[in-house]
Amino acid sequence: MQSLPPLVRRPEILCAVLMAALGLTPMGVRAAAQEAMSPQDGPYAQPPQQPPAPIEREPPAPQPGAQAGPQQRQDAGPLSNYDPELFQKRIPKDQLAFLGQFAGMPSNQLYRDKQFHKLMKSFVPDCTYHYGSDKSMDQALDEVIEGSSEPVVVRDGRYVMLSGHQGPYLSGKAFLWIDMQEGIGLGAFYFHPSNGEPTPVVNVFSRQVTKEMLLEMSEMPPAFAQDLAAWEHADRVPDLTTRYFITGSNKKILLEHDEDYCMPTSGPGYNDCDQMNADASDKDMDAASYLEQTHHVTNATAWMINDPDQEIWIGVRDRTCGGVLDPLGCHIRMTRERTRVILHAPPPPHPRPVSRR
Image (cartoon, rainbow, N blue to C red; front, top):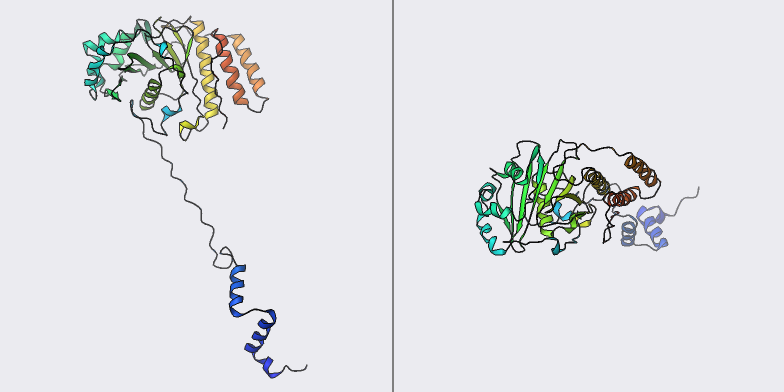
């Protein structure tokens, strides 16, 4: 083999010649290498950084009368369809002014006040109520609120609330609410009936309401709906219960769930809000059947009767909705329509939201 010229044998000269032939300088080699190698390449490459996982914390339990935060349960309520004409025989403001002085005091102290007991006759129905046994609504409230140490809440200088959960049996709990500005009074009584009706149950009531057919939750005063939900959350009332309304006509009617549990205003939302909407429609339909069977009396004690026609209809609904793209939406719509048929009620006057995420 013929030997290379002496200059070419020197490595540094050979390297310079090759670089010149390729049109590269030492600086250009480094730049090209840097351009070709990304930070993700090479032996010292680092894995891509992931943003830290968000820390999920459950919101603190709201107290009755507390302002609703963006993640509190009361924000999941329905859009308001409140009509002030729903409430008749308003209480004069001058008869309500004394309530403000009880703010922060035990509920028992306000409840035992003689002036307050006289006031209760304006909004507590004069009906027979079955709580363990037949008694007046006043007597049922006595058993649950007398002795209560829960504080009286006066929100915004206007909404007065007192509550108690002293019920000696059936997990009885009660809540009274008065709007001092509008002269409106409402209440709610929660317990676990053992007489054959759907259980557990929340009976909302007001003597100032005389509607005969049914009510939707969105027809309640928005402030009451908010405070009721806060009370239910604080007293650990289940998210979904059978719900009635006892009117001044001493009739028990359906208080229909028209909340949409998938609404964005519910904050982080429920784990399965679509199923919750379907369960709510089922509870309303069962409650409607019981009301029809017991003729809307306020102290019904009959065991619920299985209706063969109803069982046939449920089978038809399940088969119909099982073959569509949105089975839960179909279930909700058909069940709500059936509830209205059972109660001989017209369709709702406003669109019913069925939110699909």
